[in-house]
Length: 541
Figure (tube, rainbow, N blue to C red):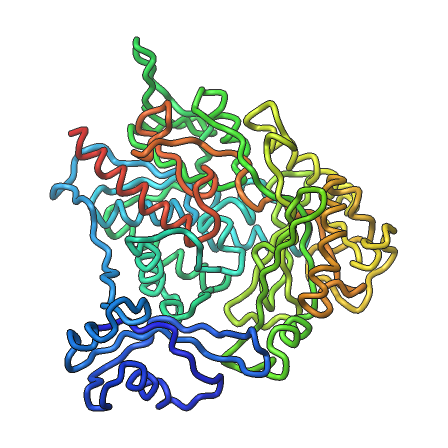
C-alpha cells in the first residue's frame, strides 16, 4: 500500500471527497483505487475563513510500482511504513529466572510491566498508592473536602499523574520504531476509542483512563505478572564489590518488608521526592534538571473557540479549540503554555501536606465551560537552583508552601484576575470568569507565590499572547497558583544500556527519571526500558 499525506479538503467536505482527492492526487483512474484507510486526521485553522481538514491515507492501487516511480522523491507519496511492533526477546517457556520488579504503576511502569509480561518474564509491579478506583475516591476527597491522602492522590497510585489529566497521547519525541503506535494500539485494546489511532492530537480523558488502566492490569496479571499496592520503597539494597562496582539486590518497604530483586525498573514519577532523596543518599547518580514554574490560566472555552476557529467555532469536526503559545522575554526567560486542557478544569495536584500545586485535566468530551493551561516560565539549575542535585525539589516546595499560605491554609489555591496581576495589585474579588479549581480559590496577589523573574516574565508575555489570541489577557481571565510539577526536577542518569550510570541493573525510566514528559513519551520509554531489562535478564542466565 501507499502512504499519501497532506491531502487537504474543506471542513464540510462530503464523504466521497476523500477518495476522489486520492484519485486526483495520484493521477489514476477511479477503478485503480482498490482500497483506502485514514491513518491521520488534523485540521488547519490558520485561515479561520477557510479551515481545512488534513489527511494522511493508506491507499491500495492497481499498479503501486508505477505510481511510486511517478512520484519518486515526493515525501507525500511513499510506501506505507511498517509500524508493527516486534519483541526484542522472549523468555524461555516456563521462565524460572529472576522476576523483574517495576516500581511505579504510572504510564511508564504500566508499559514496562506490560511488555515484560508479554515477553514472558512475569514482572512484579509495586506502587506506593492504591488501585485506581480507590485512588480516585481519595483524590476527590481532596477536591471536595480538602482532605489530602499523602500516599493516594493525583500523583501517587495506579495510573500515575496522567490519570488525572487531559489524557493527551501525542509527543514530539523521535519514534523511528513506531513505539507510540504500539502504545495507542494497547490503549485501544484496553477500551480507548479507536479514533486515537487516527487523530493528530488524540486524548482520552480521566474517566476512560480509569477503566483502561484496570483492563491493562488484568492483562498483565493474566500473563503471570503481579501487582503489589500500598508498598512504598523506603530503601534499596545495593551490593558494592571490592572494585567499587555497584549492583541492586533488593528493595526495602516502608512496612519492614523486603523483596529480593536484581533487575529493577525505577518508574516513580516526577513527584516522588522522598525517593529521589533516598536514591541520592544511597549513592545512585542523580543530577539537577531544568523544569518550569508558573500558574494555571483559565478562560471560557467559547473565547478560545472563537479566537481559533472564528465563525466555525462549535463545529463538531473541530471540537474544543486548543492553543500553544511561547514568548522569549527581555529578562532572558521563556514563557509558554503547558498541558493545555480544552473544556476542562484546574485541579489540586499536591502530594505533600501544607503545600498547594495545580494541574489541569479534562474528560474525553472536553465539554466543561473553561479552557485552562499552565502558563509557565522555564528555569534551570545553573541560574536558579545551583549547588545541589536536589535543589530543584527545595525550590518547588518553597513556592508550593507559599501558595498554601496565600490560599488560606485549607488547600484552596491563591488566585488573581489577569487585570490585577498586570497592574500589580491584589485581587479582592473575581470577575466574570469563574475558576474551576476545587476545593476553592482565594483572591490574592500571585506575585507573592512566584519568583520575581517569573512574575516579570509573565507580565511581559500576557499582552503578547493577547495579541495572538483575542481575550487571552482579558482583565477577568483567572490565574491560579502554583504550577510547579511541569516535569521532574532531577535526572537519574543512565547509560546506553538504560541502566543507572553507577548502579548496575537499576533502570531509571520515564518522567520521574527525567527521560519523558507526558503519557505517550513515558509509555514509550517504559517499552524501551522493558526491552533493555529483558536483554539483560537473558544475558545474565
